[in-house]
Length: 109
Ligand code: FES
Image 1 (tube, rainbow, N blue to C red):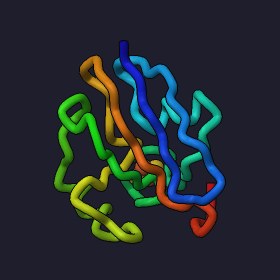
Image 2 (image 1 turned 90 degrees about the horizontal axis):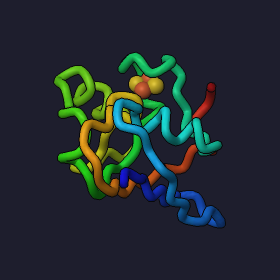
Image 3 (image 1 turned 30 degrees about the vertical axis):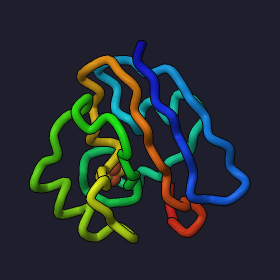
């Protein structure tokens, strides 16, 4: 089975685990399940508002590109596990752990 466990930097938000479809991105999976992650550019790797920390499952998603790395550098508090959720297409079955940074300080969609 394929699933994503979302945890949240924002206080008062509980961990949630949802099913994920192969071929969907982490962002698409979140939005389908009512989990709001900003996506100001519409998911075309042209902003950094969909930034998340992929704490488990890096080998299950599409590899990071140079362009994605450039935008991650502009995100707030990037870490080694940082990814842009719109660019993480799920390619293999397994469990992903995703931490969503505080979305309340991001303007936009
Ligand atoms: Fe803009 Fe992901 S939504 S880079």
